[in-house]
Amino acid sequence: MSLELEDHRWFPPWLRRYQMEYISFIAAKFALYTPVLPILATMKQQNNLTAWTDCCTGAAGPVQFLLSKQFFADTIFLTDKYLQPISIATPNTVVTFASIDILKDAIPGNGLVTMFNALHHFSQQERQLIIATISRTNRPFVFAEITHPSLINFLAITLATTLGQLLFTPFVHPFQLKRLLFTYLIPINLFTITWDGWMSVFRSISAKRFIALVNETSTQNYSVSFVQKGPWWQKVSILTGQPNI
Image 1: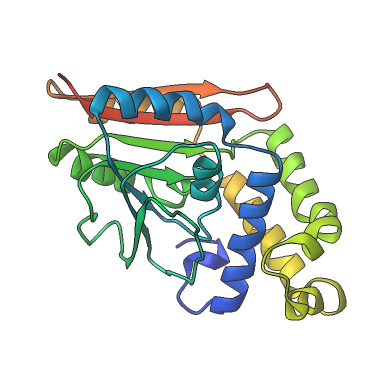
Image 2: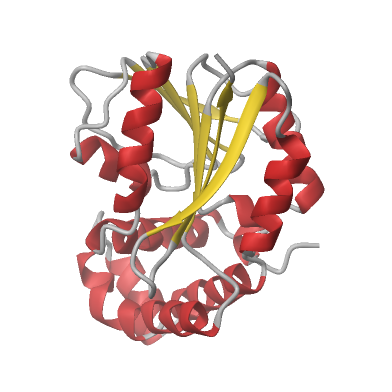
């Protein structure tokens, strides 16, 4: 059973939304997914991709960050088990929203599949199932994780979810007085985001487990690879897969 509050259906949707919006703000503010950009650009060119499906989208912060860096597709599907309202300005892109359970439902679209800081929510067996499902359709994927099982990452997450929330909450979009109320006066939001941040570190995926995933899911027709990019204090673990040409 997951210890992360956001994983449960009973968790209030407005608290889940505030959590996702804050995480998206931090990821964009500090450009945490910058190391993923060259890998995505190479994969897009190699596979001639025009369609893109993001799974476990949350508030779509990483997607909006990539769009701001000119990583485009003709069509984008944004999917999540607990889909929430998202506003994205993409004049030349058709954006479609879909509420799906990635473990049970077909992944919509027919191009690149991405997932940002969500793979740690699943067991190793479930990760294998997700990759096997994608590989059977010959679609490439890029999964990126910014949490790691390390003391440095635990301290960074603690700082971002405590002092960071107190400093940055007024600047999180969209501005809401209710968000301020439940961060400063009745600090439920402060607690839930900090708790889930800690649980994310405890459930994060080690390099050893990523390498095991590579060995367990690569086949003669489909290659899976793993790399870590970024500075030592904020490594991004990147798992990729694509059909062998």
